[in-house]
Amino acid sequence: MEKEVFDNLDIKPEDFRKLGYRVIDMITEYYASIQEVPVYPAATSSEVEQIFKEDFPVKGQDPFDIVDEWKSKILPYATHLGSPRYFGFVNGSGTMIGTLAEALAAAVNMNPGGWKPAPSATEVERRTIAWMAEMVGYPGDCGGLFTTGGTMANFTAIETALRNIAPYDITAKGLQDKQMPGRFKVYMSDHEGHISIIRVVDLLNLGRESIHLVKSREDFSMDTNDLGRCIDEDITNGDFPLCVVAQVGSINVGVIDPLEEIAAICKKRNIWFHADGACGAVGTLLPEKRDQYKGLELADSITLDPHKWLYIPYDCGCVLIRDAEKMRRAFSIQAPYLRGTLPTEYTGLYYLDYGPEMSRGFRALKVWMSIKQFGAEGYRKLLSQNVKCVEYLDSLVRKDKDFEALHKPNLFIYCMRYAPQKIKDKYEQDSIELNKYLDELNQKIADEIQLSGTAFIMTSKVRGKTVIRLSVCSHRTTKEDIEIVFLKLKEIGESLTDRSEN
Image 1: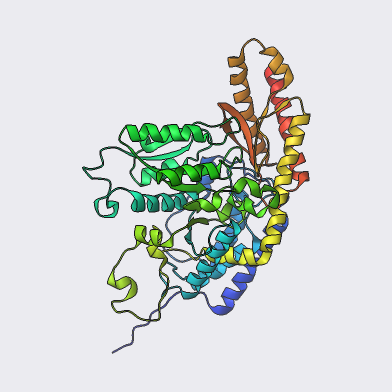
Image 2: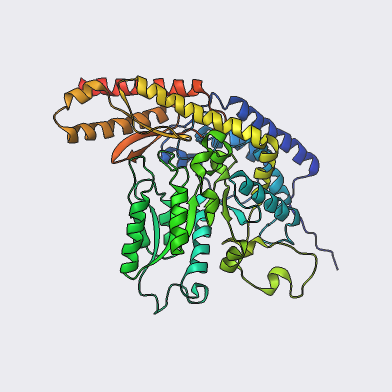
């Protein structure tokens, strides 16, 4: 009988080495040009779509030709989050060692959902989670894991809350129980609460009406007096206060809610205290900012995204939960094919018991390597540079009569408004028309600076006003970048104003 030949189609070792060198050269050239590359491609969605229209390949293609398409197709139409002048959303800049870590993790292809398919990956994650806890002053024996991002980290935390403090066995019965006529309630700030919490209550099927918005103070932080009122109101209506979500570095102005006050309210009323620090929790590393974080150590759960202010390549969120057993109780699941049917000493922590994912990537490696490279001292230096850049931007805004400062700078996020004096004089008697004009003007400024390639900036809303918002969480950004961008914003604003006047 003729022996059947199987082919795995792997690239031959020598060819793979040549291909790898080519890829490393391309990455090195990219990092060398990251300071000058146009941040945004200024191509329409239909134009980019046309670039990638091709039939499903019937025959395999040469790997060298495929890799070369990175330079001809991918890079020319990429938005460059690693640029020092990328200020959109809250996207980190990507550590170089993290790039190498991703390649190494993909090569071994471990699945740290379980210990047996990923012994070393599991222990790297366990150790790195302990480092993350130490970074924010949390107990080192807490539970925790890495997720895709802040949304799934928040989901993991609030699902844990639901499974542990609901007044009946929610794991067995779900949300359907005759003894629970009211709603579970989740509380967050009316201004700075993050939209990911809405996604979380969607995923948990709690309904968007489960979110109770709490009034904000003048400084945008949560009004804890109103929080108490909201809780009392819901209890009177037969609802169940489940969780208070505090912002720890909010999305528009970088505010940190009064954590100690919130912790005291939650402890007294047996409500889960969740600290959403996806944007700003790691600011605890900065001694000059640490007082703002008092009470963070009291939270039942904390989220913090390494792919934001720790500059880790996408994707990488993180959740920490004080009591690891509560995590396990929320997510543990059993099947004989996951661990084997009989116990053995050759096993360990199964992360699939502590979060929503069963199959998971080796996200911890890029965090582990980046922390080892920079250390606490390196990260303090980089975070401090970001804060100084935002403070410098605020000083430029306050010195220029055509810009409005809307808040004091705190961490790395800053919102401002272009509002030229001559326009304010023109609409002096009509504030509604003035705000409408300024809303449109600021949106056009953000659009035009994107298309110019100078910087990537988005707008947002602060107390109903359209504002220009910069998230300065690139470890490559300098004061010179801030000045270049500020002057470009002013130039575009003046040009648009002159055009509208003529």
